[in-house]
Length: 284
Image (cartoon, rainbow, N blue to C red; front, top):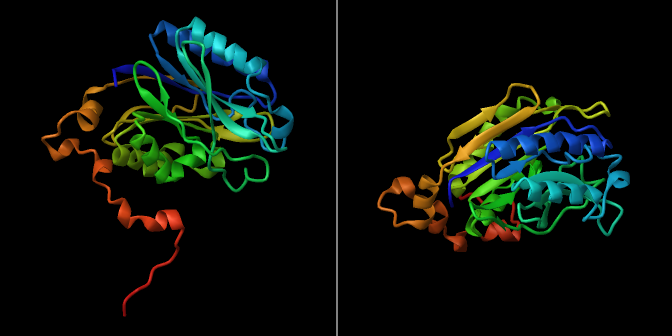
């Protein structure tokens, strides 16, 4: 990994107002370019706005007119863009997709693999865990509910991801976003020796739902190195230093401080994770 400057955006996305939402993104992308940002991440379903009931009608076949705009912006500004969109699937229920538009004009996608109970009636889960590569770093995406499943982060790390971007659409009714994130995102970063870079929708979506916002960056040792919980729409820019993660991942480690814990796993003991065994037999 090289030192890399990233940007996280907490933005209000109005449901169905795609042109308006793309214009907001354009503003942040152009500002990020001026500040030498290499990767910018927007929240879950930022393109159409987060909705469940209207998702099928707003879903787009990718590539679409919106994705073409984003690819053009990525190439014109020499920046990799990560942003959420409702993508048509082969069923009536679309995907919650995070587009990856690279600075070279390439278009990739990650489809949310773990759906919350309120999303299952409206969306189709994805079935792939891709890792993406640019010159500065290898990165992956986990969307909102995905982050509650430690296995996903571990698989990404084992497959070379150095940064996990974590876009959210978490409403205010769930609770304090910073407090909630610090309960488990620090563990995902520390256990898997990855940077976790999280952002959230903010404000009213036009359908009565209110999102709490928040941006948070955690380093591979579980330390917070950047945050914005001001409650205002905006962009957080953070430099991710490569020295420590490179020591952990790629150099001879002479101190336990730089242990890459996944190297010391014993998969032969973890069969229950695959077999789905529940419950424990206790000796009496």
